[in-house]
Structures are given as C-alpha cells and as structure tokens.
Image 1 (cartoon, rainbow, N blue to C red):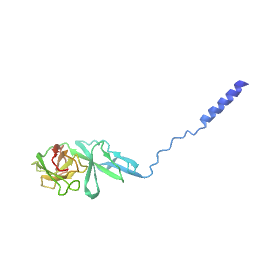
Image 2 (image 1 turned 90 degrees about the vertical axis):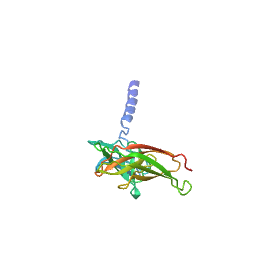
Image 3 (image 1 turned 180 degrees about the vertical axis):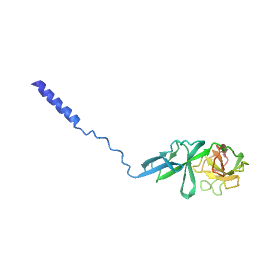
Image 4 (image 1 turned 60 degrees about the horizontal axis):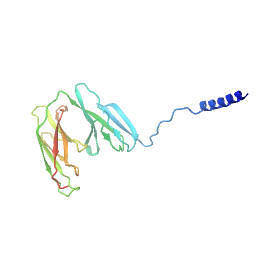
Length: 207
C-alpha cells in the first residue's frame, strides 16, 4: 500500500515535468532595425540587421578570379567615399547602409614613385584651424594610367587625385602627428594596382 502511494506521487511529478512548456524560446525582437548590406558587383553578398545605433563589423572579402579584394566602400553624404577593410567596424549605424566590394585586377602592377609630403599649418589656432598634408608623387608612364587614390590610415575617407595631377591635399585630424598612407594607381578601365605604403610624420605643429 505504501509502495502504491509513492508510485502515485512519482507519477504526478513526472506528469508535471512532461506538461511544462517546451516550445522554443522566441527570437529577440529588434525594436528599431537597420540593415547593413554588402554587395559584390550588384549581387547581395551578406546582410546584417541590428538595432539602430549598433555597431556592425565588415565581413571578410569575397573571392573573384584574377582579382584581389581591397576593401568595402560606400558613398556617404556629400559624395565622399568611405572605405572599410575586412574586420573593421561601422560604429553606430544610424540608417540602412549599402557597401560594395572593391577589387584590384591582378594584372595591373604599375605604381607611383618618388612620394614626398609637406605639411601646411591651418590659418586659425587648433582645433579650429585645419592642418593639411600635401602629398606628391611621380605617376606611372603607362598609356592606360588614369589617376591615383590615397587611403590615409588616420581618415575613413579616400581621396582621389584629379585627372593629370600628381598631388592631393589631405586634412589632418586634431592631435594626429603621424600616419601611413596607401597610394593606389588606377587605369582608364578602373583596374587598381596593389598600392604602396608611405609613412608620414609631423611632430612640429602647434597643437
């Protein structure tokens, strides 16, 4: 008789566990979503949806035959090109953003040479005044050479030289005293060189 009672109690306990809600947990609801989309030649490569203002990390670049992946790029307000390397963060994404993969044609190898720079102090005291770095180089002599793009490590924007020129002006953020600049040649078909790195330092400015 005692054994029957214990079995009955055990059956109730088992029934309680079985009757518990075992449905899967609901997914986290994004209250104010924004989507960051990465494209390769017009085709969606990857997209990430997060809360507005969250950070998103750029994925590794895709593969393309006879080309090397350079970076992800998007056009910001004002027409400025912003670039992001693999693993770089897009901080505080405020709205839907689309980025495109940029490749270099492995067959185009021509680079600039004789790179140099001078720094021009701003006209007003810092941080109001904007110091500038004037970068110059000797362009390749190839008939299909078009222009140069520079990617300063201390900025998230690229700067493109005007057709036929061999100089660009780069703004220097407040309190930055050195930086590495990647200089890429572009041909008339849009193919890009591997690029060279140039290190510039300027520690004598009145910050």
